[in-house]
Amino acid sequence: MKQGLLLVISGPSGVGKGTLCKALLEKHGDIMLSISETTREPGPNDVHGIDYFFRSEEEFLRNIEKGHYLEWAKVFKNYYGTPKDFVLEKLKEGSHVLLEIDTKGAMQIKEAYPDGVFIFIAPPSLEELRNRIELRGRDSREQIEHRISMCGEEMKMMKEYDY
Image (tube, rainbow, N blue to C red; front, side):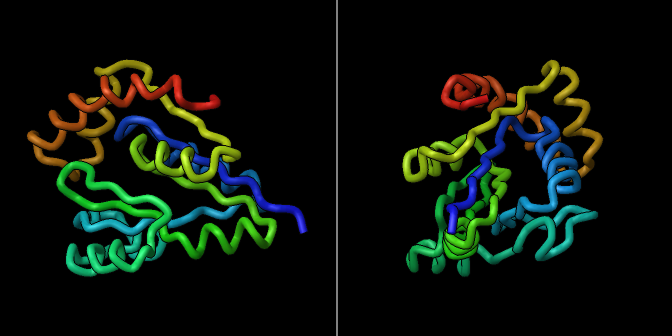
């Protein structure tokens, strides 16, 4: 059986990764989304098991110790991770797997799985990015400013991506 393709999409917070991933999944039924685990609080429209698997910090840290994650990072005071078993099993079965993750996680994946396809989504402008983050309505003013300030560092990572 042919190995599946690992697709990794990342970019700054609020850039539209989720919207693009949703469109890709709707158009290509042969791609499976890997759902990340996180310690962040659910947003008003987030659904456990669909948008994320929401975990307590204690549970997440136990999972790190068990080697449960393909990659993990602490981003904006919360942990995020990609469950390893699901991704590896689906790739082995020949399924294509899509990861929507931050740049730090993407680089961890690239080191372990360089044959993946890595796609960076850039914002049209910082002003538009700020508007999108504010419209989501789930971040404090401090979190919004932090996300915007991180955008410059994340944009420097663009050269590490295939597309």
